[in-house]
Amino acid sequence: TQLLEQSPQFLSIQEGENLTVYCNSSSVFSSLQWYRQEPGEGPVLLVTVVTGGEVKKLKRLTFQFGDARKDSSLHITAAQPGDTGLYLCAGVYGSNYQLIWGAGTKLIIKP
Amino acid sequence: NAGVMQNPRHLVRRRGQEARLRCSPMKGHSHVYWYRQLPEEGLKFMVYLQKENIIDESGMPKERFSAEFPKEGPSILRIQQVVRGDSAAYFCASSPKITGGNTEAFFGQGTRLTVV
Image (cartoon, rainbow over all chains, first blue to last red; front, side, top):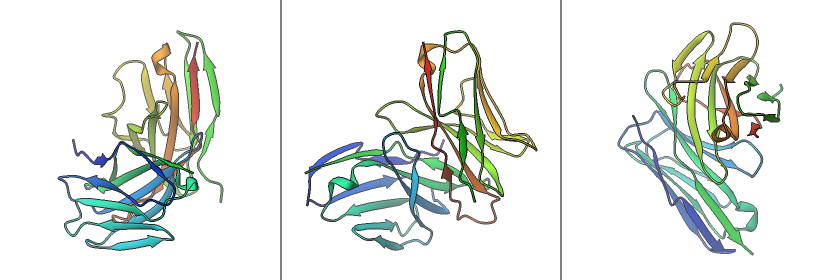
């Protein structure tokens, strides 16, 4: 079983602070995605990273794919209450291009 | 282009009844994934299907649960003789035919199953 470990599992911080969520594995992934899920809804894709070392920015969110394509991070600058939600990473693995999922990071930003 | 459609959105079943959850993937998508999510938890993988084939069902309980994705029609997740522990949100995701490593999954809004 290929594991994708996500940390922290839960994070509660004040508005304006910075934070980083990590997604780590011993397996190499073809690509890795980050999703965000709001209560009562399905996850929505935020970004896909494909190349080792790749960095993508989405407003205050910065996504990085590790050089060896085994890990990724999501950094949020000056967090806002609207960033509250469950953040999930998913790696594409194997000849079947199966998606392997992390358990999620529940993020709460307090005003 | 409609997104992934799941129905029903909410389903209430009594213990011992059968639950049928439907998922129509996005147009052109031939891969379907089913996930279960308990309140305040992440997604738990259940099964991965391509048209008419089960690719990976390692996350699905061996008894009472089954899934199919026929050549025509939606994917069905069937839970027989439901128990209270089956109460959860069940999400379906679809992705297009794989031609490389850049797989992206699109999720439905889920079916919330309540067993009473």
